[in-house]
Image (cartoon, rainbow, N blue to C red):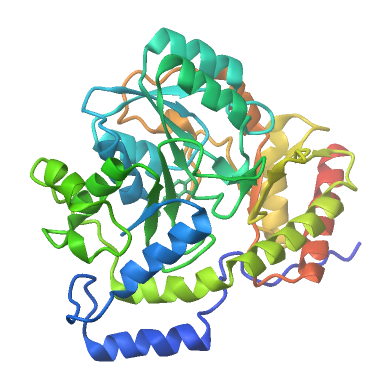
Length: 400
Ligand SMILES: *Cc1c(COP(=O)(O)O)cnc(C)c1O
């Protein structure tokens, strides 16, 4: 058989639009890159972005940050978490999440995931009860949103403040509600591979005025918080401003300008991601040896990546599948490796955290988890070719 090779890079994002580039050049020429460096009648680009993102997210407040990881650190402090406090967290996520918890001195209590990469509700309930944790960081990892009715009800029952990591669910909904709006705070990333790309960047969103005020002061507003457009009243700032350290986590105007243009296009981007996801899904489902998740009807997901599990053969052969696909230009990530590789790491490699538990179910699921990024620079024919390559290589290993 003459084996086809896929030639496009899996890391190629779309370029910035001409309009965004034009605005960015204007800002560079103007020299006012810092969000608080504004003329008397001027509203900073970062402030405009916050207002526009808050509208899109259907919340009162948005605070633009330097990164998603910083948004999470600021969120954890702003909800009142203190060093030594326990925090529930699903064990399947990426390194910035444990990093953010560690940075604020939180003590993670990791919760198992199920075969669809959702937080395991029974384990969550058990650990909410046994740990006494008053916080939860829920990462909607790779866009898979858990049963939020159950998560919210457990948090209510045990008085747990919920923070959502929406790095992979910007624009996604569950039963009509935007991901990020189920708990006290939503955190988003604008890192280069996420749903909006300013290289680095993040958002924190909330309806709570005290959390918003703390977040604004934490990100480093000096005493210029009055320059935020949609911000809590002066009274709320008076209460928090002297007890809230400046962490220098502000977004600048240059990045904000790039993001403002992308936000106008995000519904179209989501539509294009889902077309590509569905093309890949249809192709991969042709293999009897690959399992794909059934996405529930009430989950409006964003298919910016796809996950599947080989089922017809032993997991020790998964690295061979990854290798054989790579030889044909198809870049699959495997979450089961004992050592972290590039962006993927398993929870037990975060050894700076104490008392890492043995989560057998999570390890078993991750041992079979193959993961692929879906850049918008791929077209639908690319998706057909990619899935065909994966199906062929899977069949070859299954026939051994
Ligand atoms: C990207 C990402 C973040 C935030 O990352 P930054 O690079 O700090 O913006 C958080 N959680 C997950 C799951 C991510 O993929």
